[in-house]
Length: 230
Length: 302
Image 1 (cartoon, rainbow over the protein chains, first blue to last red):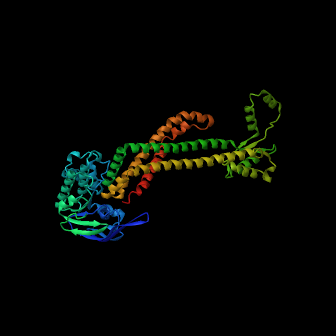
Image 2: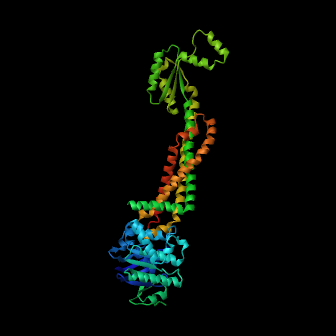
């Protein structure tokens, strides 16, 4: 279970303060598929960064399972992150590693044995339809392919939660549909999915829970929601 | 632990290989820095040898009166040798002095003939004294000027040579200080340039470092491969910089010998052919590892 309890986050830039999040509270249960929507600057990315521990809240509490994220020390963050899978709009693959190595890296840092890596990595890449590009470097892959490698990397550890920050932002409609299909499949297998997006079509088609943000505040939280921002 | 270590080493080598251009550029800069470092070592050795040979030429002689007995002189000799400032004191007897004089002037028939004419040896017995530090001659001179020795000592050469000795002391000191100062300055420049190059190499990898942290890599796992890369830079640049200096020394050794006959640079390099590259590699490795560790720290906050 994931909870945000009265979370506020303020950024200070050149003596100006901007409220990225203001008194935000919500709970996400295990195996849920939740879309967080809102315009640019509404606070979607801040929620993601608070979940991954890249940022700490100024007020309130963020928990993922037994971890109170805002209290996890920097040196212990890697252990929390091994329970999470994260995918980004700009893919964030390691440029000097092949698709195989990018996916294997997640298992390697967790200290998993080589035999497991040899078995699971090809399986994960096959699941996202990339078994023929295992030894290609990211620069040799298309946007959609890169995002699929990123998904394979996020899923290889069997994380409890998959966090997707605008995963289709850089993709064409065909690839977008493909990626959403993969996310749904992962959710069916029991992983909680948090999808931050401003793509109206995706949200409306998903017919899953939607949390709507505006200016750092939650203005809607519906069980089978629609993208209702104007 | 062993698995993590072997993975870190593997990624260190992979990173080094796949970032070919960046690695080459870093190594070139490190080679230049190490050449400066090596140049400083050699320059210090040359200067030191030159200064030592100059210092070795400084001495003072005490000439004894004819009536001073050998026993008396040897007593003074041993009392001088007991002084901490004195490196050695050589006794030159009247006969020995004559022998030296003869052999020095054996080409000159007039002098040889004149010596034959003399019925007794006109030369005085003497002690030739060398100090560890040229600055000690003043103290030795004062010691010898004590009243108890006045009856046996004819003269001490210090008074005559004091100005020259003092000037040499100043020159030697200035060169030593200059050498020390230039070593510090050039070594700092070399260290800073290398540090900056490695910092830039890591700066270009800052996004990768962030990604590694986000997929759950511990700081040890992120930092490790960069430190291994630093180690590889150090070993390669240490070895190459030594190999570059070898032909240079081979060709210049002869010229250095003309100026400082005591200095055979080539022999120095050959007899130190393990220690010198060893220093280079240790210096290179420490530079590589320390620079990488410091440079990477600021990107590990994510």
